[in-house]
Image (tube, rainbow, N blue to C red; front, side, top):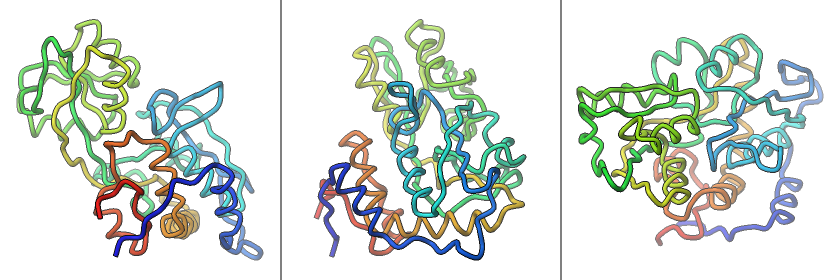
Length: 275
């Protein structure tokens, strides 16, 4: 039977986190780039996942990383970065991890390790209503914007052979190119795509495609940090923190994939989830 979770106000969520047992750190401090602190890379333009609001880091996974830090007894510092440099910087201990759902792929596993899943990514293509691309395979021979270094590039090339991929440093640059008719479409994660369409009336979306398992990156040389993050993630999945934050930050039509519930048995379902 699915466990229902009412959306909690901020004060109630804070109480939930405060009442959750911390992972013991008395004798074995967690190794981080800076002692006592998690240094987390984040993107400034990827609503609702990771962005700036009123001059501060905001978004779904920014809030989830803050909850992880509290669970581990660590302060959290967010540092803005671009996606292309994120994994090399985690590998080289510039950051401990990232507030971003990084698609887990064999090439990326050669660079960094990953935590247990924090999502199962879905993606869709955004195009202009005046020249819609309702199905992603319709992007063949068209020019599509994708964030530089994204694992969505080979997926797009596989679905739409002959597509012309044009890489941009961030979502804002890709969106500007689409609105300026410099590209025919933009391929990105589901929540970001939905946010763009809600923000710009002249844009429309394609169907949804599964793009794979998403997790937080961790340096291969720091297995203790990876283990600590996995323990914190498991607790926050089961106590409802992840579900509450997901519902708070994501559009109502974006739901938690069933695969994530299967991965974390006992994880509370969304209030809007079907019975």
